[in-house]
Length: 252
Image (tube, rainbow, N blue to C red; front, side, top):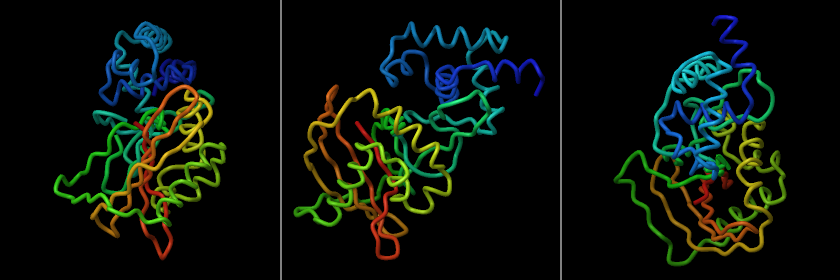
């Protein structure tokens, strides 16, 4: 990488990097604005400044150079965590807060399910829908919820409410932590949840059995009222060695 490009990337603000990371994932200015709850003008201004700093003529080129500098692989999925997403190590997820140093952002994914943060956690900031990689995977809502499963999911969300990122990170299954660092998780989660304000109430909606390898999953949904909006939170759990561990979290 040339010194000019390196200097240009180092000069980018974290917000400009965030926007470029979404560009390389297939978003346009309008969809980025919707995703981040910003105006299109603000997004276009970020892109304009990023192009100037990197001395390139297109936002796509700026995004590609940033992705290459961060060691990622270009992806194109319809929606992002925390909108956080959930699960494997496939490329830069949302963003890492902080300095201008290159840092790879792994996508947060849910085992065999693609979490399409929101935040953004994170990138809740807005996790739209979970799309199964196997459309035939049966999902069965329970007639009677399992109190232990629901309580585990609720306690996990309380950790997020309280900003206890390290404790919530430890609640994830090992394969999640293997590809998503504590720093990535806490940064994305904080950014995704902060705009929503304080939690006012959380109501259980449903529990669903997802028959997918290796052990099957339990998805628990809550309707949560924050000071600034009402959302649906989905926590997906997997039984691992006798314990229920989190493999995904998403907000709609």
